[in-house]
Amino acid sequence: MIRIEIIANHSVEENILEALGREQAGKFYTRYSGVYGTGHSGPRMGDAIWPEENFVLVIWCEMNEAEAIERAVNSVKADYPNEGIKLFGIPDPAALKLPAPDAPPPQGETETASGAAPSAETVSLGAASAADSSTGAEPAAAIPPAPPPPPPNFGGESF
Image (cartoon, rainbow, N blue to C red):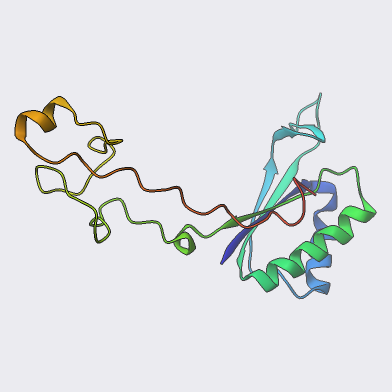
């Protein structure tokens, strides 16, 4: 699963929804309207000085549907290149197989002197602390490697 976020000027919202319909993608979404912010396309604040507003569509889908969404958004962006249309893909954290905060350590990792799994407070980078030397306990396990990088964001920094 991948979380797709489409952020664009409110003026092209109907165009994006129609393009998604043509691609038969993005049928189930969450829509946020009246979204304010500043990006590469300039401020969108909904006030007298910066009157434009953005909207956001959030869609959870499989990769094949994400590719259809990308085609739909690209077609609208080609017609309206100055409307600040952005598309982002964020992987499902569960797909990264990250351990739960209270999960036992993976097989082969040591536990702390108290018998508990290492936590953010007890993780050591290999140097024994004063507490370790006074109790005679083994140093806590090393910090595990970082998770793999997220999937590509559809061919560029933004659309």
